[in-house]
Image (spheres, rainbow, N blue to C red):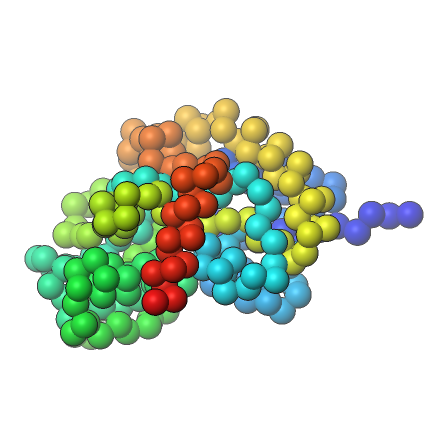
Length: 250
C-alpha cells in the first residue's frame, strides 16, 4: 500500500533554509514554498498538512498543533523585520504593513501602540513585499518590510526600526516569528522526526547558505544565520510566544 505524502510548506527566506534542508527529496513529503500569509491560507483550505507559518497562526488556531522543538526566533535585533522610513520612523503617523506576515504586522501595532504608547498611528495594509519608496509616494511615512528584502534594505543603510530589538528591549524575551504548524496531532507526530532530521542537516550548512547570498553580503548573511537566528523552541521562546499572545489580545 502506498503511503500518502504529507503536503508541507515553508517560507522562501534565508532564515528558513536550515529548517528545510533535504525536505524536497523526502519520499513522504510534497514540499512547496510561499510567503507566510499564503501558506496560512493553504493550511486553512486543507491544501497543506503542515507549514512553517507566522507564529500568530498558532495563536489564532488553537485546534492545530505546533510541531515541537523547532521555530524561527530571535533575541534582540532580528535584522529581517523592520519598519523603514525617512528620518525617525518612530514618529510616523501612517505606516504601511507588509501583507506577507500577520505576525510582523501584529508586532508593528504592538510596537507603536504599547511600546511607544502612541494611539495616533494609522496602519495601512498593502501588498506583499511593499516598496518603501512607493509608500512615501502614497503619503505613507514608514513601511514594514520582512524577510530577505528587509535584509537587503538594511544592508543599504536605510533609516529603520528593528522590531525584534524593540520587542526584546521591552519584554526581555525572545520573539518567535514562525513555527511548524500541523493540522492535527497525528500529522505533527509523523513530521517531527522528519523536520528534526532536516534541521540537523541544515545546521551544518550555515556557511554554504550564507555563501549563496552575495546580494545580502556573505559575512552579513553568515552573522544573521549563526548569531541572530534561534531555531530551538525552548522555554524562553515559549514564554515569549505566550507574552506576545497576551499583549496581542489586550
